[in-house]
Length: 376
Image (cartoon, rainbow, N blue to C red):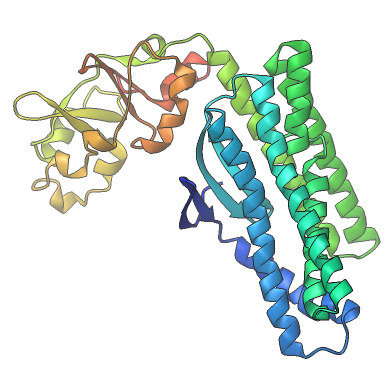
């Protein structure tokens, strides 16, 4: 889940917001101000309802962020890199880079978020009781009570043993430790996750079409998200398992054709494209030094009237922004670098010399699937 808006870093971890949060914010504020708070705390001004509801919604987002920060901080402390955190319509996602090496580390990272939610539920519950005992503002008390309940629900939902929820990750860690096989453990946890998703979808359809409750639509969307996430996580891990033991040098496209960056786009298309099947070309300077990489996708976007005057290098990506690997590295260790590369392309260097390129097509070929193009 990529963020739509990046808001900065907390403890060195990038935090982003997805546009779907705006929908949830409006829904929470409208529900609290129009239904929940007027029932439990009657006879207050309408403006007070809206103000407290907006603050409560923001604190709920802060709770979601705290939950994900719990995962991220523990992961960082245990040596697992964190790409960032994104808050979106179904909660939050802490994006971890690479594999978790042991079931113990998996369990510690998974339980960190629910422990934060538990602490927040206790904190807001304590604030509610304190306000009640001291005769504090009833609307503030109502907002704290709602936040205590929301964090409790967040805790309980995330502990459901359905992968990739936190409870499903805890289940996978337990099965992994017991069986000694991470991939069988993932398959079992993902199966339970999909069964839970089917149950949510079924309950949502019953509510929607039999009971006529629009809340059923939310359960359907939640079940669909859980199903998609379980399948995606399972596929990612099984792919890494299939690639285990392979090195970059085993799957890369060797000895790629280097193109001079100083020639025009038109000359490049006339001289290099005929008879070639590559989707990307490493670039070289006039003295033969490696100078980056250009993809055919970018060159195809150059207007025809400009191709005879624009240089290939103008549309390439420089060496400082191209992902790199060495032929001796494990393929699974470099997969996460593709996100930072130019359209999924990676240069393979041995002692500073270009020996190949690596692309998703090469990975697909290594897995035994059809690959439409390569960087040969």
